[in-house]
Length: 307
Ligand code: ADP
Image (cartoon, rainbow, N blue to C red; front, top):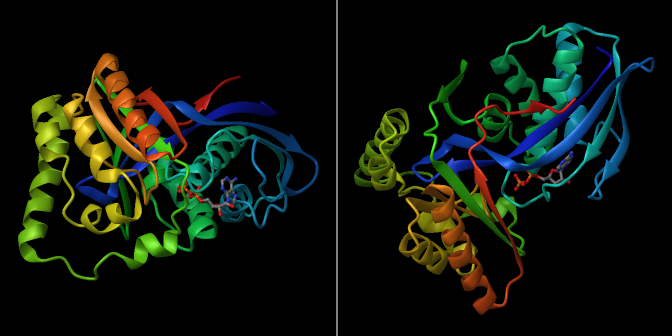
């Protein structure tokens, strides 16, 4: 095999109570990438369609992630990469993670699968280090493993793939506002009051259990965040109303996707997820902020080979 075309999914991280540890992959939103073996050593970005991103591989997460993999093998191999970017950078649905995960998945395939998924996560995390300054694992884990993923530990890296109930759908709205990652970090507190921590880990346990037993009521009761959302939500105009209207429209829960500005909701069944989309749209139409909205089944496969 000399070339491969892949779909690299958008992902939702910081899933309510799973702040910094839980993520999931989306099915209908993602980038396409074409990767070919080349005689020229290293990574060459040959095409970027859809967004204005650096062609210099050292400045693009594609290079950061790809070179991390090649360096681990001490490899002289060369690859050309075309990126068809559909996920807007800075949207909060893992734009950089999709490129990083897609790159390491494809190169690994073209080299005959020397690495397992957890090892690929570690390489893709180098892309995240370039994009946001820290090597976070939640988006790239969800993109590579698919479904819901739990980053149980960073040292050693321990990623657990969690069951995804069949009727679970996500609605994501991306209001066209900018939130600086630095601001989203700054508003968080260094410590968590014990009473909030107790509620948070009760909900994490409940959510994981609900996902395995496909208990939508338990999933709904567990989708609450006492650690990040109370502080970060003030950065997103309309967040409280979007959340209220989503729940009224039938969502199981609603929260900030990544560090925002996108907001996600989970629902049982496509019809409910579409009603939630309508409710979310209405809020931003009334406020006068432009938006993109997506409804998607949870992608349980992760990065997919197109051809
Ligand atoms: P979010 O998770 O909020 O969607 P990202 O993690 O995608 O945001 O971060 C986007 C940052 O990463 C931008 O500064 C962008 O310029 C940089 N970046 C570098 N290479 C890529 C790439 N291939 N795809 C997306 N963003 C990239």
